Length: 253
Image (cartoon, rainbow, N blue to C red):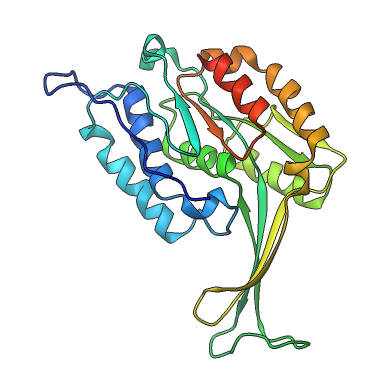
């Protein structure tokens, strides 16, 4: 599933300078515009290419006119005009997946592995997931301008889930809305060839597809209704269930 470009609603040329909300909106536009890999849980979203896009967003923040709201084909953004006052310091909210990407990369000069063999290389764990990725980028770029990003998500009570939570807390993402359950944390394992292309991969996203967990996550999201309603911006990962997306959008309206 590809991620379409967002349509933007701009004010006219006489609009006042960009507010904090428009800066965050501009940031979201660049994040969404560069996140085709993340929507299918491909690894390495927070890599060199995406980081350059985030730098571009940061550099263009001061040049943006006021942006009221917009929506993309796979991510929905809500920015009530009444909450555009930068002095409010409310927490931006991000609801969606948290995934661990596991990459196997051949050492320099090595050909891709053949059936029944192993080759020298490196194995890297990379935190991923659409909502988690965007929350991390905002946490790293906001420099205290907005409140701490709040992530509403789901991980398992396992090694990968614990590692993801520690990483989020280290980079100053609010994890009180990350639910831990007796499930396997969503993970994607890929083997790259010598050109950096995916040779093979396995995606364990059963936790995100389980109807029972989806229902529980909708109820869990409701617990943070005040945070969502007060948020200067709310981002919803469309890989969530229809019910959870609708509930979040209703709360943010």
